[in-house]
Amino acid sequence: MSDSTGNPLDDPATDPFEIAAAAADDIARLTGVERHDIALTLGSGWGKAADLIGETTVTIPATEVTGFSKPALEGHVGTLRSVLTPKGRHVLVIGARTHYYEGHGPRRVVHSVRTAAATGARTMVLTNGAGGIKTTWKPGQPVLISDHINLTGDSPLEGATFIDLTDLYSMRLRDLARTIDPSLDEGVYCQFRGPQYETPAEVRMAKAIGGHIVGMSTALEAIAARQAGMEVLGFSLITNMAAGIQTTPLSHQEVIDAGREAEPVISSLLARVIGAL
Ligand code: 8IG
Image 1 (tube, rainbow, N blue to C red):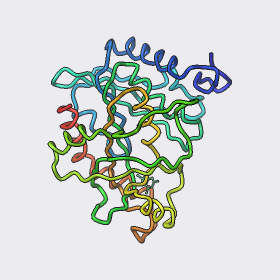
Image 2 (cartoon, rainbow, N blue to C red):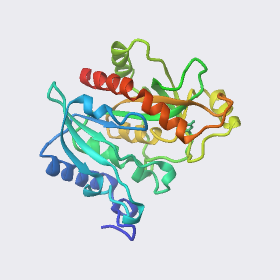
Image 3 (tube, rainbow, N blue to C red):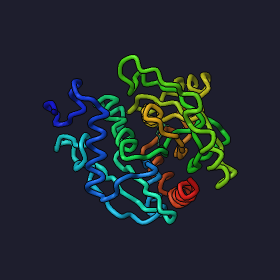
């Protein structure tokens, strides 16, 4: 069942896919929507997009869904929303990301993705706020994720589970996004463990090994999405230039401000892309 944390995912004897299936049943029951078509995880700066995608039919506190529950002391938990698009597609909007740096392990980090797959979603749209390495980029600019480098040293896969990650961030979906906004640039996302931002030397390393974006999410989720057979589309909002690329210190406030300013533009971009899926 569940161990002392109250979350069944924390018991290694449980099967995370069974827990995801139970979570999907919860979502079907609470939303009245038997199957979702698309799932969207909202990262920092992307929060308003859900309102433009369609009509929110139901909002569920994540605590009511199996595996999302947390000890009460941890306070705020996000929501899951069921949104109906004008084309009649059901979008599961995940506003309840668990970050790897929270220290609960990869199962918890990717549970929302596995749950989305279990609800029927074949497309996983992952968004985040991140630091930019390319000097042509400006804070507030959205970019496509073309590939990733997982620097967490961890994996959501358990046992000898060999999953191909060629074209993980679907070329087809990136091309589709560029039909909506041809100016979209793309780059390789490096997932660091966090929660501290990088040192300038770590950013130089990321650049040297082929990275363009630094962040603290998404790569582990994308791996789990591929394992579940989903097609992945990834967007980063460049909220700040990575440490050492910008010479002034990084501040969380700067990140929040860039996100707020960019929000209307990127929300409408995302809504148009999802409308075209
Ligand atoms: I927003 O510069 C945001 N998230 N690792 N580095 C890392 N994560 C981030 C950054 C950044 N900005």
